[in-house]
Amino acid sequence: MSDDLRDLPAFDDGRSHSLPGEPEWPVLEVAVEYDAGWFVGGYDRVEQPDGTEKKYYWAELSPATVVIAVADDQVLFVEQYRPTVRNTQLELPAGIVEPGESYTAAGARELAEETGFDPASTVLLQEVWCSTGVLRHKRGYVFAEGLEPVSVDHDSNEFLVPRTVPIDEALAVAREPPTNDATLEGLLLAEAEGYL
Image (cartoon, rainbow, N blue to C red; front, side, top):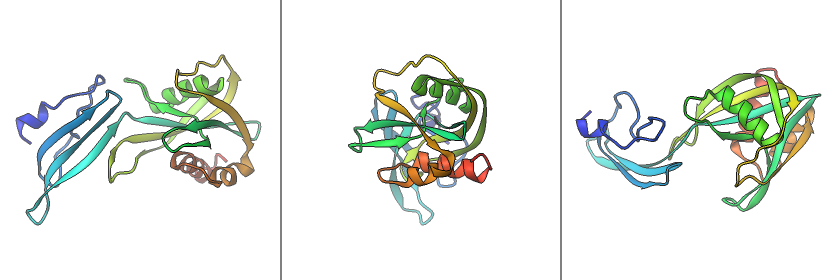
């Protein structure tokens, strides 16, 4: 890797716009075309196996946590309007992992902020790459239980309402349109691990 790729712009938490390790296909250039702080967009100019070159565009987002929280045989959801897709969705609580935070710590924090419940225990079910054709974004799915009420502390752009759904109905409810990948994946993982 050339020295100029090592000196790429970095996020405040130390992430750079190039991924660690040596890529299988040579990266000839990394270009950042847009940087809003929380979202970065650009491309890698790559040499493909047949010797041709191509620009592979990407969007880089901070890691996120998605929480599957259960209490009294109920799964805790949040109902919120998503301006990006212009509809209201019933989804699992989720949010950005802050620098230095684990998925489980971020999950507990986001759950308390969004729903007003603090979990007694959390466990990481799985970390995954999301939409790998265009995103550089990891998501950690966290199971939480032992919920105790705390005060709600919504972010300035969060207008959401906590809702509960019986465990045996949660997956069916989550599959009703409109829905999203994080909610479905989280419930399927929790079910596969025997938590639901």
